[in-house]
Image 1 (tube, rainbow, N blue to C red):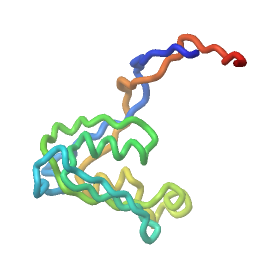
Image 2: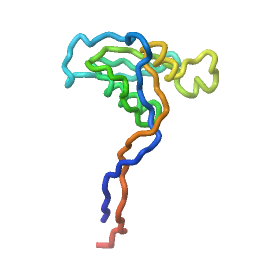
Image 3: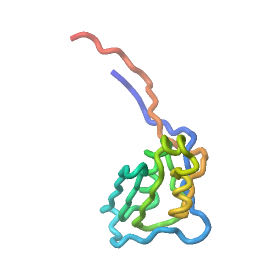
Amino acid sequence: QIKSHIEVKNLPVYELTSLKGPPRFKAAARQDPHDFSINLNGHDNDMVLTAKNVSMAGLADALADRVHRIVLDKTGIAGQYDLELKWSPDDVVNADPEKAISIFTALQEQLGLKLQSGRGPVNTLAVDHAQMPSEN
């Protein structure tokens, strides 16, 4: 038996923000928010994220898996977009930082977006009570 609840805590996050100037990606050909795709592929020592008809919140969610932290959309950019992002995996960046491109640099140079460290609300699971199962 286990009893738990969701608790919101103020934890480290990344905030996805927009750099000055226009975004470096194009509006989606279709504007159906229920029809989007995000593909992540490794290719020639690079990672490639291709997104079709994705919102900035959807991009933030996809980035969270790559940066191992919740990403909050703070861009203020509405709508759906098609975009592509290429970067080097962490092990390549660590091995040869001069030739590799981190996901943080790629976001700035390729999309005109930035990940900034911050603190924000994160849903966490709090366990109120746990009991070992008894034998049947």
